[in-house]
Length: 459
Image (cartoon, rainbow, N blue to C red; front, side, top):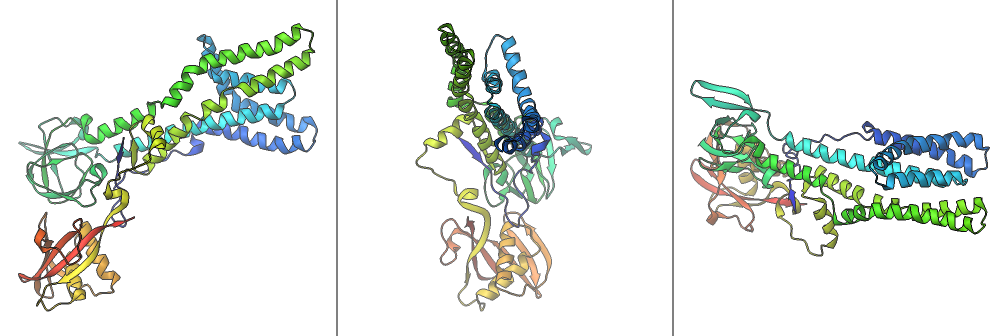
């Protein structure tokens, strides 16, 4: 299950949550892993090239210490609680490899483990970034109306029943119902709808959505902590804490497997030694077995990829409900996708221009007239009409006395004549328009001139 947010339209204002990406080197795990990796890479050619041990030995020591101190500390803490985890097993395996002269192998194990830990920390931080970005969608203050006037208050102080004034261009501070006024609200961040939705008294509105035109008086219907955007944030936070079935299985057997590896290693070392085997050979055989049998690769192959996928999805506007859902994506063979914001860009474009019979205008004249009237407007349909006129190289005349009525369209005086552009009736569809297209009607001095068809463009 996932909630899909609309992508950032171009050139419309940004709709998705603001990006706050944690820098890689801002994480201590990443810095330690980088030190370990650099030291290992510097030591590797010296070791393979036959250089004296004193040239690469200190570099390996730095790689071991910088990449292994944190897993070693976690392993010792687990040991204090009478549990044996993979962190301590990995450290023992790396030190064992060094003890039998396989310093390179032990260093590589340390570097892999440290890098995986850094990637997991980064994925977790990026998931938190997406949560903080969602929180930024909701405004921090709102204008509350009282008998004595209006006051600016933190949105967290709003209570159910409060009356809030939302001016054009402001974000709505709480979930509620329109009490007075009318306006077109951009709900793309919540519902994925590509076009603003006309809101009248009695209609529901959501916190974090953008009021485009017209002032609204909204009666708060939910506590701000229980708004739709707050619940989405909660879902994302819960997703980062959920565990996929594979990880649960690994964690379930990790303790038993680690104990089994330790017991088996002692047996591989002790039994041949008891029958007279050479000490060095027995130790070499036991350490080799421990390195090969260590479950590090299995453990590292579970949650880090899932966390990375969840964080990456969040940065691209997809909020994954849980790690379980992410893992099950691999089992999907058929997908049904919502059109808006998924198969389409979420920005309309003009697809048909149809002059009315006997109107005395051709396609270019009709489009230029509509663009002139719509030019002062910030509505997505207006921007699409103006863009279509410019793409054809048409002259857009200046407009006077511009007015916009939410849900009804715009009116302006162009070349001394009153031009109105508004949504057409369903029976007035443009020629060639599909059912999913929006049709607008153009009139001049009350005379119908024609229609324009607009549709959401495919990705």
